[in-house]
Length: 560
Ligand code: G1P
Ligand code: ZN
Image 1 (cartoon, rainbow, N blue to C red):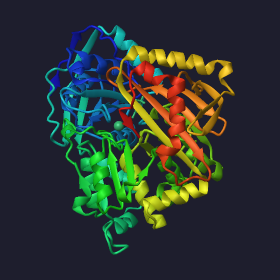
Image 2 (image 1 turned 135 degrees about the horizontal axis):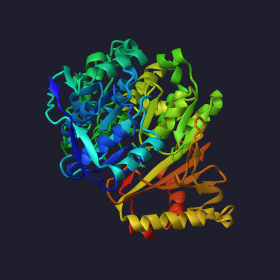
Image 3 (image 1 turned 120 degrees about the horizontal axis):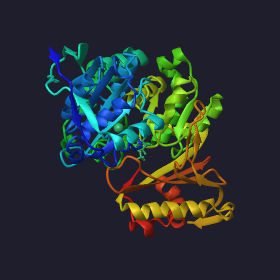
Image 4 (image 1 turned 60 degrees about the horizontal axis):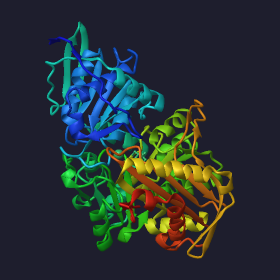
């Protein structure tokens, strides 16, 4: 079929600035005339023509507007000379799956249709993110370029008559302006499942999960929260690992996530937590809308903080064939993540990096062969098998550790803390606050803590006293390309290594979300209650930041 390219005049929209993880707005905003078309065109234009003749991947988490956006991508890619486009069936591809497909197919990049863990549906959020040829989120210089283009755009190119049946796996071939254009609608899970089988020992895991090894099947509760991971979970846990059918729930991707907030934490995955707490389960796990986040809980809902999860996986990394084969390079965590993994790195004599919030900062280190395992406190864990965090991967890593040690989740953690000491950690989120006062709070706090008189000051609460040692607005120089990222969060480090971090979220779609992170290390007292141990430092943080005054909030929306 030969098709005609149309050039459509358009005007810039304000605010098409990608945040921590792509452009996120309300669905209604994306539905604005030419809004989505503009942004897609700017993504392609940011390549300075390199998309012509290239391969791209597109897919998303199945939320409302995904299919529509995928159709727009097909038409705009056709008009801009892209030679091959892989699209997931029904526009479904998890974020880790897109990352893998980009790498496997040596694509120029991928367009991800997701607002990750934000709620979906016509009145909720949508998002578009661009990943580069290494499979990872576009770095700042690329997203800045896309944003700049969005402020200047005057036209986009589209092939109007190109209608693809995204529900049918197969190859669709066209000729556009005399050049071939192929859209391959692919099975959403096949490539990803193959990747997991290359990384983990599925035979051993099957024996463990199905009960062939122990005589009793493992009691699992895997909750996809009606997000994209459902089909992947069915294929991996039920079909490949032989888990009992009732081990998985909410595995049909729904456009509004069935009203669930697809964020795997103690607040939004409450159903999982309650079920595991009152039931008979060895392991519970949940993933977010696009499948890159994970939460792990043990028997009776014993909670594994993401910071601890990272450290434990680091400690046992060699029980996973991928790492046994490729070797262990270094580890990394985002700055607000508790520093438990640093202790494992020190013991193993490995490099350990502290990067700003956002997965994109890990990519360069992975590409340079200096990093093989990393994580964020925000329920992100992953490795250099792709360039995104990976929820299902993390769950398979935990299964591998359980199989290897023969221990329960709780016992694995307790043993870890006995060996290394424990980083008590909590994060308070104050969601959808008014933007202005939050900006003012950050400015005031920065001024307070960067005053030289702040260092050496003592703060007391609940019988504990903390002395300030370092305080700054975190800035990061990428060890590989030497690029500098400034203003990445205010941090106060105390003499005993405990930390307070305050930053504003970069992923919200309206207002401001304040995140307050508290990290406190204890060498001996490792079995205490996290909330009690952290209470004094929380009070000190609220006092120094004057958060209640600026936000008008006396309690956070979410505590993790
Ligand atoms: C949040 C998390 C961050 C994560 C990002 C994308 O960003 O804090 O760790 O990389 O979502 O999943 P934030 O809203 O804090 O900018
Ligand atoms: Zn996500």
